[in-house]
Figure 1: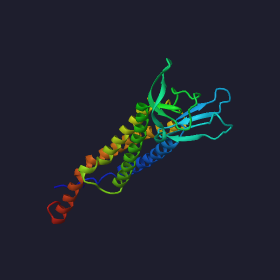
Figure 2 (figure 1 turned 180 degrees about the horizontal axis):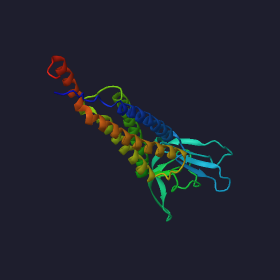
Figure 3 (figure 1 turned 90 degrees about the vertical axis):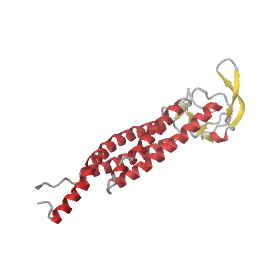
Figure 4 (figure 1 turned 120 degrees about the horizontal axis):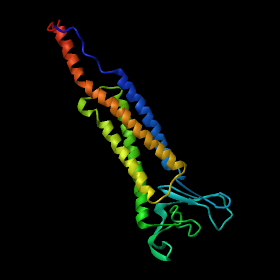
Amino acid sequence: MCNCRLEQPHKKDKIILRIASGVGGVALVLLCVGLGLPTWYVGYSPNTRTIMATANYFYTCHLPTDEASTELICVSYSSYICNGSIPVGCQNETTLGCINPVNSANSYQYVDAPITYISLQDLQRVRASGGTAIVGIIFLAISIGLTLTLSFFDWPRVLLYIPLVLLYISDLFLVVALVTGSLVIRYYHVGCSLFVTGTMITFLFTIVGAFAVGRLEAISPRIGADKDYEIGQANGDIQ
């Protein structure tokens, strides 16, 4: 005889998933805003501390040197003129690379950001970094939606870890974007700070989500057992 009733799935695990989805939403906003801001690299005038140039994974902006203008001119990397001769190192050597079509001044140092010119290899790296970051954000958005759905509905046991798998992929893409982009742009300003913060919050989302999903997976067999108990009790098989 059995008078005990098997436990239903813990509602608090569902609540944890909803909270984790909210945390993931915060990370998503920070990542999108940070990635779009031009202030990954900011170059200042050594005398007046005026912003002379900015750069991110998609475009660069610079202050014209031949005009008394205070408005930055922005140019996408896709507009750079490639297969041109660019300087390399300090030995007056040159190699093939890509040149900013609206700025050829030498006042912007290449070691700081690709404001004036950039090698073909670095151009491929920075554009790949931007694409990788976008893919990571897309995976994160999908994972948030699935996690939120999981917090309201009961999923088959075999599908419980799909949101986490997508979240792990998102973490990987975001880190790769940061590492690859750092080979080209020396970033340390607002845009990068927001993106890095969003990436760290995504790791927190992953940890909390894995904890809650693991608990749901551990108790998922009890759901079927509980239904069998109810059926047996209705048929009089269990007292």
